Image 1 (cartoon, rainbow, N blue to C red):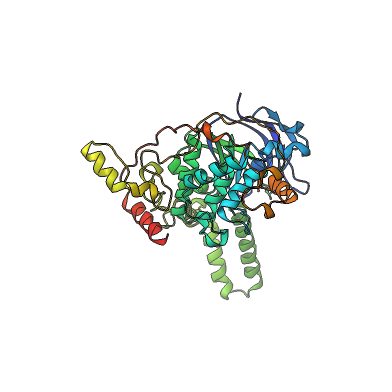
Image 2: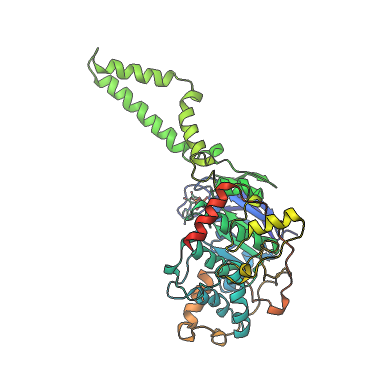
Length: 433
Ligand SMILES: Nc1ncnc2c1ncn2[C@@H]1O[C@H](COP(=O)(O)OP(=O)(O)OP(=O)(O)O)[C@@H](O)[C@H]1O
């Protein structure tokens, strides 16, 4: 049985003019990585909100890990959300807490034992490359670093499912690549990822399953898909309306102008525009859309080489050493610096996630112990009401697995040499840090 299944699901918001989701059928298997794509307003966030049980379907059946979401009461929702990590576009970190506290807090509200928190937080921070930033507050971090804290918080419990709504929406291409590498690594531990995105370069590089929505309907579902947003040009309706308005303005101008005057020219232009075949008229807009969306503007195109050719994320990644070792056939042993300097601690052979567990994710609906029992970092700051509020507003995964459950991850694919553009980006990131 699929981990996530939607059957004939529709969602009509109270003041919605059309269904935000329209009789959607979708199955997502355990371990899948699914990109939800589609123009603005196509229903991506709505679908994620339904899975998170932030919204309820108007019609149809949604099952997540065996739970029929129609049968989950509001009181049971926080419990349900413990199996689901959620990453937002705008991070939603607690600004008065440090990096360490932000991540620890997700465990505290679940009543995780102090010793487990102490063991899990540094591991997940190393995983996302934030070792050394534990004491920093969100405002002292870059956008990419803040998003990595958010991912660490969402992932620290090893949720079965990680939902991400435009997690790279506010980030530059190189930083986005880093975020994708973290998500990919998390997916390789068995966590199912559903990510809404507009970013074609990411989708086209990753070649994961792509589910495309258009006006609330699934119009495409491909195992190793790509995304071309120009196929459903997001502003086509706006454009069509604009053309109509312009054409009616032109005819009004022609009617209002005296005969033989300027109106003749206007009429000439308007007539030329109208008599132009559609494909020619659309060319300019199509070219612009194509250029904007496919990265030919240089916004993304250069930086986004296929993901497996880059692996730029991770300070201390010794690609030159790796390359030399590969060439000499002696295998790769990361230098001491690779694992001890500030940064990810990632080395090439295990660049995926050194300390993550690959064990079966825990089942849903584990009882919450008292929040008080969890006080770890800043007991003063951890009051139960805030904790509960955060638990529902910022869902976290199920109770953390014991630290002893950690098993080595399957090795990540080797990192070939970086293409020049990616190498430059990595170098820039290195210098900035
Ligand atoms: N709370 C709401 N009340 C009424 N209508 C809503 C609400 N939230 C979303 N909608 C409508 O539902 C449709 C789908 O919106 P949704 O946010 O799911 O799209 P999206 O694909 O995530 O868009 P974007 O890429 O811009 O985030 C849109 O027409 C939107 O206007």
